[in-house]
Length: 495
RNA sequence: GGGACUGUGGGGUAGCUUGGUCCAUCCUUCGGGGUUCGGGACUCCGAGACGCCAGUUCAAAUCUGGCCAGUCCCA
Image (tube, rainbow, N blue to C red; front, side, top):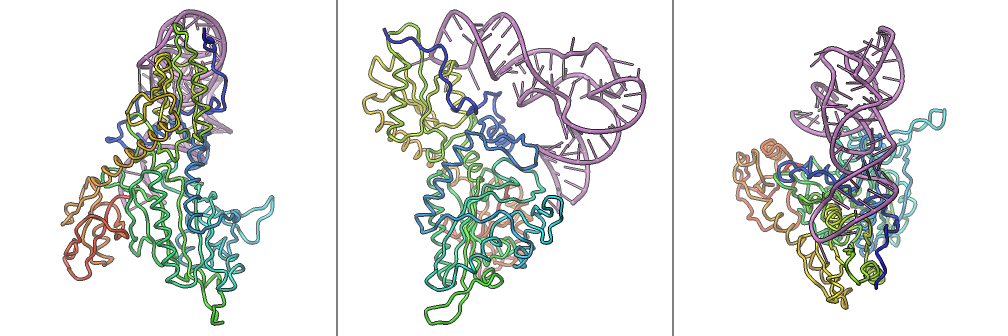
């Protein structure tokens, strides 16, 4: 006789923060994306938005697991390119904040101020960092003395604050941002350009881990980062003409280095000014993953960010001699030893209810352990894309590795297929109106023509592709018809 | 930046127009018991709410004002 099933599963840490709450059916994703997004984030219990300050949400235990996995990908990839972690303070004196004119113009309407210390008013008000250039660069000026100090590549993952007046949304638009920012100093403009390229490569690898296709575009002059020489942004099409900016890389030239005095002595003994770059990402990536991959059943996490890669569900039965609970525990332990993030759901719910809950929560792979499997020396594995099969118990670890890899591959293939269908060329401005796609058009580079395109699509000229796209280069500007200097440009509606 | 609407247990809602019927309804959730368990089980017992602050009134979930938060639309 096998041991009887325990009356009640032992409590685990996850019980305090349930991975997903059951709820009525989700709103239709295709028909009402925003409603679907808000509902799925709440139902999967990734974020608690009941905190009583606008745009500041609570990270739940389950959401925190996803965030840490996301950050692990970011830190691994950026460190592989020779960047080191640092952490600078959150408060910036107004005097430093105001040194670069364009930068402060771009940000002063959206910063939080600290104006009092205890009961007394501060002589110099402090800004809660909306981004950290002005906190970091005065110190860079002290750190950089010689060409031997270059390149200086550092990054930090910290919270930044922006006083958003628009509607805020979990992960996508928040006032307290979980921000990844790399700041670098380079010998000269060419070296800074090379660093930008290195960042583009790093992001390509990050996005691959998240199974996210994207457009790398150089933003038009009027939409670049405040203080930048140029900005390259990563845009994810989200259905219709909508795009979500995933992050950006900026070339600053010496725009900040001059006002902040970041100089060095070159090999030839002359004093030179560094050229700088930055690379910014945020938890918006998590929103993008939810938005791009999720379906009518809930979230779908790629393995790299999934809070749990595998959930094991025992199927109890009173009429068997098999020791199902012990067998399930053994499966979990074996996977844990193999380094997998795995969760045993031994709760009182019936198996079907657990399937729904974990599908809502986005776990890539579910393993079912029941009398039927044990009698055959097998396990049942079902992935989040609906593929179910029997695997041999004896080769558990290798089978799981294979199934997760296949899952990631299929997830990426599906996202890639959606991506290809999301972009279409347009030869006339009329085609931009109420467009159901992101549009690729000819653009002469003129700002007036750019704004005409923006008006036509009721959105933004995202910019010119920085990486090759499988689209023909148009012969004439879609607005003025000029053929001189015409380039391919993308237009869409930023979320 | 401008406007519209909304706020009732953990989640979704009824009640609000016409103040008293409401120690507030239903579903879900949560805690406990029992029967169960291969795609959202059933049953019994129990828990839990009128966003905050003022005002009007004999009486406020309900009317008024302010604040906070949320949703949507426009620039």
